Image 1 (cartoon, rainbow, N blue to C red):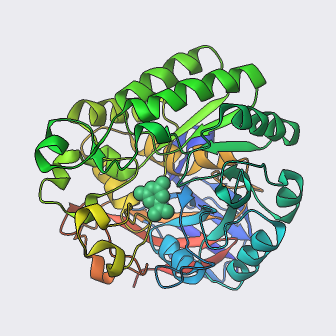
Image 2 (cartoon, rainbow, N blue to C red):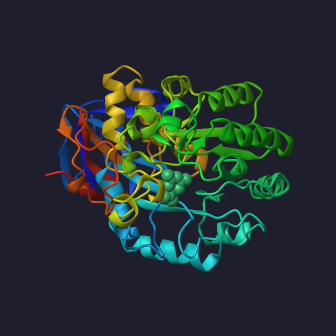
Length: 428
Ligand code: DOR
């Protein structure tokens, strides 16, 4: 479809651009952009969208999503997940391999992509497992998985704890110039762990999950990334100590990127005071100084991206005792609204917010998108930054309802999501 978007505030971090501009999409690409009213008159649109008062931004990209298919379709399917993503403003999401079976072979990657191709929603970018069965013993066939369409490798949900194997994974990834994403959690320091190790966990009777369990792996992996000159991405950073390690490594030129979730930016372990299983998450919510450090790191670029770690679970795993409940928070339909609240609170500028939610993740994964220059894919999100609403989990497109943000008042949301020139989501 040939679409023109008029009178919007165009935010394109790749060009450092934040100004009123019209955009024209044709043949699945950005065909033209110009100051308001100055698009070439020969361009004939089939659809004109008036974006007055709205932001026109590169389609959002989420580096960390659990679509649950194959194997756990009662929690989420590729269809509901990709549609939920579009409703949240995401044009592309990276799907984690901890499915059943795990995405550790060409046939699974191909299956995921085949299913995704049938959905009108966000694009799916499969992340394949680093090790067979995510068991941390033998590397998967990176070449074959990349050929099948994988865009990076992670054992997410589990840490690759064996330093020798992780070194080989980094070397192997370097030879393919692909990205290794690490779930940083030293397993011997988190046996039975349920909540951030500190006074609250002790008082609540919950086994502690110390920050050092994350920091130990991050420190090790930064050394290994420097040693192998591979590209490393640290998933869901939760602690101030990790931020310090990342800052020092980046200053030395280590090829590392990192993500933080909306829940770690917004909440502390206070959220589990009532044993709310919606706030039970891996890694756990930590303390105020951690939260502050994460916000500052996102602001100054030490942390590159916001990623949701969208982890849908059913009532069977969540409406039960805290110690038996599954770890995870859904995020696709709340991330942008909570991001807009960070702009409202002057933690991030609009340009930086969009950079962390689109340009930076696309760049880290080396996938097209995250930019709005002529010739780029027509992946575009229209954001209404002033459409306040109250988060209501029962209205989610996602099958997951497990959010600690129910009832939050947020400033705005995505009102349209365009993927490859197709309007896959539009708010009435
Ligand atoms: O809370 C989490 N849930 N963290 C993870 O790393 C995995 C995820 C899941 O798959 O449920």
